[in-house]
Length: 499
Image (cartoon, rainbow, N blue to C red; front, side):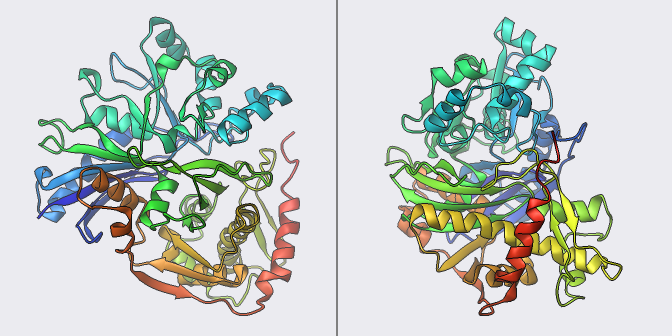
């Protein structure tokens, strides 16, 4: 029996998951990595720690499955998208820590752009000129890191999102590693022309980035290269799928038709709707992005709404406030009270993403009284996840012209039944969770498997989806009316905090 492997390099952890032909999980191994917080608005990762973790989780999953690397017919990679790394192609070593998508340090440079430049950037890329995306982070590294500048002068500097870093290392690194990315990751850099699917000279000039430092752009489903025979897999396995994490979740959920949508609940929340071959340029603060491109087939696009902090708010309650010892404790704590007691929590730790795009915002907890307890705060955190999702889903429906009758969900927080019921009540539509909630990794596996013929078509993989849970809304819930009004009032209190 043969299998497909998926390397899922996320914001807080890295996983390797092995799937069988039915799309079922055979084995999984996961390791968290450190969040490096050196200053306000700065979020970094140690790329060498992540690479070491990748090797450990691959070995662990293979051991759990009781199989060898040669039992895998292909490997897919999915990753935190806008996180960027600079490294030396001659030594293979990072020149600085990876700058994470949540990091806002590129804000000042972006503010120096003219309005005409910002408009041009958004037209070419489908994205606003925001520090969320990779280009401002690359520009900051060039300006601020002596090691990066020296490597650029000597011609040894290369940049990549985390998929590129892993692909390069798995295929040999300094000894001929493949230097490539896929269209979904490239579309999140502010450097790729979303129509032509290639690096754009005008954008490169704006951010002072040399084309030679960037990877080749390929489709999301093709053979990029092979793992080394003497590497972690012990065999030459084709790496045949790459997708940014949210696009991977779309594929894993089988969102192949125009109008199909899903919301992934992770460190942040990301809702997408498939717009087919049509590029819809948003006027409501949404992102126009590549959904996927399978080999030589037609490119599919999407509209996306992004929320910076959702699951990360639960981590904050656990790690910084120490209200809970583990993330899954928040559900039982929140259940101790029937409502939020008037407490609203807006976790704008690094500003607000869609549909606001306010990097001057910061987090607030409002409505506190002497009767407020940690249970009320726990419930407010879960409601914050759901209210932020509603904001972007309403905008997605309006701009795509799709009336959402059902929401497909995935990600870790979807195991929280209370949170999903709150989401149904706040949206006033049915919320559906598939049996396999690791749809990000599953999407990468599907892309890899399609490229090597493990599965024959998108229709075949879509047919494998099995619904595990459904949550129906409480009709006319106050959460959807008065509660949402109070939420919007709370959001207004976060604005203009940073000058």
